[in-house]
Image (cartoon, rainbow, N blue to C red; front, top):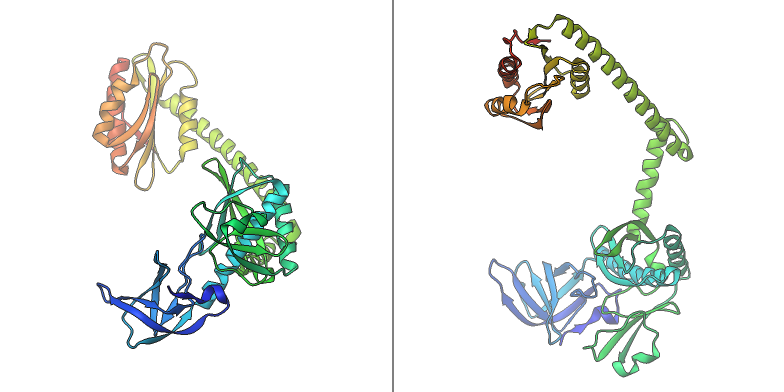
Length: 411
């Protein structure tokens, strides 16, 4: 069994060891088992360490059922001994993540009776899932307050190795797995006790800071996204820089950013309303002019118009004004850069069913859309198909209305 130096001294990150066995792997890598190691193989949700062994990159670390730690290297290493170096930044980060998770899990329990059911330590954030439908903001704020108080108190993190028969003397936050006969209990001194195989900080002060940044509902639980340690500090720095940049851009104090943005949003909304009003007004005026000049097709006035870049609001307003009175029919298209929008409608009391007229022309033009009765609309994939599509629908609709198709107009 490999001697696990990471448990004896979590802060030890460089070591020398004897090679117990080594085996080449397909592709040029190799597996090495040492008599002792600082490389943590992962467990309790905490990822395995990375680093170098004998100068070769360690790409994977795992523990076998008989307690040996297997190091998977990018290439074979020579000799019967090897020096190893754990990626210090990664190890210290995940030690802080894991210890911080223990602190926050106990704080959630104290603040709101929330039980942690799973945890994941990612490269960007730590996630904690709790058994709840939602977490009240006040409860989460209290859990953060408790957590960061424990960090400031710099409590010791202790490890107890006990037989299962002794577990009853510890007030464990959760029951250990039934199959374990020898328990490793991690204690945040006077605050939290839980069975765990992970590698932890030596005191809570090393965790530095805990901040929950978001929550989401998943599988009937709540998942918290949490920043711990240097991650939380770096995020704070980014937020300060963003706040300062926004303050400069909006020419206001940082405490006035939200109000300034809300004012800009309100102004933008009002401008959009005014733009729409003007658009509808212009489209209405053009529609009235088009109706006055339009020929008749049987009992209806038939208006056909092709626009270029008028926009969806203009197109809709134009058609609605044309068909706002009885006895009118309208074919309106708006060509964009590559495609076109179209609307066909009429206001005849006993007018034709448009689906039977328009649908065959849609297939010819590669257009899509829907509707039936007195209105259909959709889009065409090719700008150059807009004219033939309008002319074809105009011809068939005029015939259905009992007249001849007039020449198609465009603007």
